[in-house]
Length: 470
Image (tube, rainbow, N blue to C red; front, top):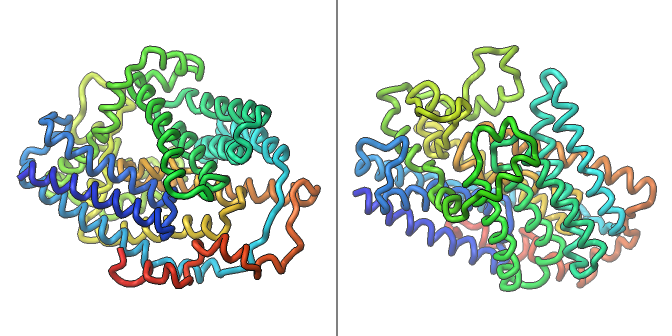
């Protein structure tokens, strides 16, 4: 039965990919959206990953004892989760638009040099968060996480300006310099891939919304493939060399270690989903027999995440740490080891009778909200880029730790949004950017044609919100 489950997972992957591409081609949901970044992670960590492990016969560190039975339960839970997520995401569009309210959109004229200077200014702001404000009691860990989001914003803003003037050598040089510095800073005493992934992803995000979006779907896919391919190569090399000592090394030492990386080794690890699917099955077998359900553990983790453990020693421990350090230890590995429980593993641990229905609702509504903010402001980098500041976290949510990644992603989005809005206000005050005074523009055919794909109430997309449209 495990092979049958593997083929079902492959079938789900194909159908989900087709669904994403069809919606992207029709303009129902932008091909680059926070929802699709999350679904990309779901495909890698919870679909193709476990299918690859099962079909290849690779034994996982946390190997399910009854793989035939457990794989069926796992696939069933994943199917229910995915179905609920897609239906709720699609059906919540009108409600969220009413929350945002369709206000008159304001055209804003930006100085390219001004925006590039802002991008450069994000680097010292990020450094301040990563190396200075991190020592503030209670708030320090939050500033450390926010620092990586600020680097992503800087790389995104530089890309936003550059891709509109792709062959301009001045903007090319400035953008590449800012991007490389931002990437380099993510290597400092850092073991995780999410900050680096976030910068790679936001480059494509900025390119898409600043320029590619107007070129047509086929052109977007060709260009996007190049960015994605380059990003995958870099992540594969990084994956093949990363180790626990990365937490103690300088950025230069960690970057230098990439020279010894092997693409094939890292690529296999990434495509196998870091055994997150198999870990989820192991958790399914262990709950509630070996360990009771920890009802809504991930949700409580989001709420309690900002509280320092020094103040609350009994603060809930992440499931990704709890399993390898308390339940079934792994020998001869770093004491900082953590695993990817997978989102289905989190749901099982958090009481599936509640979490399987609640978590897809929360996540679908959350990503729909972020995506609608972007759709109503597609040419405003001060709103579009903060929504993409945590793409690395969003892709990693299906791997887990669910609560930690959700909190970190939200902190990056909200924190970078506040910073960008403050910068925007200052620039408008000094006249570096200005609002258009031609209010009649929004009633013209030019405006209506440009943003017709973004209007959730248009006849063209009305069917996208009807029951069963997904």
